Length: 324
Image (cartoon, rainbow, N blue to C red; front, side):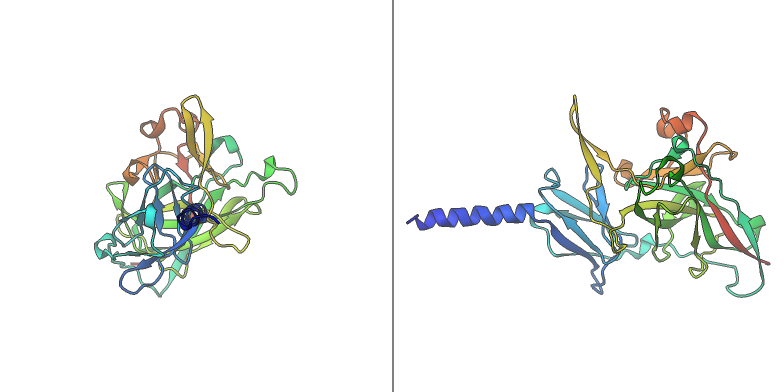
């Protein structure tokens, strides 16, 4: 018969092993009303991260992310919070921070006569002139009022490249969940976020060229100085169409050791060399303090897209234009 102390040691080791290997599900909630916060951002503090799903839940395994000791949780309209991974709670509460959400005063009428106008999207099927989205990337484009008149965005026309001409029949299936965000125009750079409700949608391999996203029910009016509209990847969808909790990077062995490379997602975003000027901005959510950068040599002089003049994302829109 084994000593009791040895039995206790084996039991303790077993419990620790189970806790270490089994993924823990955590819910992110509002500290005031305990409501889940959908699609909150979970940064690992090392240039990588993930998102919660539509119910505010995310999965974390210390075995999968053995080098991560702290999570930084954030969401639009809430103060960021740091949590140690050694003892993650089942619920992480975020405190509302109203100052993060600036109210946009809209002068356009919600009812009345309007004319439909279109800002044409610019697309192509060249995969070598397309942006490879990762879960850390966000691409923003400035929209101005149509001829200075009160303007509502009724549809976004999003150029995409599903690589259909490069795939054999039945190959390359995917379903990727995107989020659209809105920002103030701060001296021609994306500024403070504008607190519209979450605009989340899914794109699969059957879509190609241009994806039409209906926003007519969202009452999104363009302020006098314009509005930045961004496209952000949240991750792949599972079989039920919900955000899949998957590892967002690959580990590659190099001469310098194991390097972590962010996973790229489909569809690709075709960047154009046909648009005059420079009006596309990008940022990496988990790097560089979330700083926006214009997509030119100052962002990455070695980028093939920049070197070949493919510097703009040709996002288009259907617009409702009201008379003043």
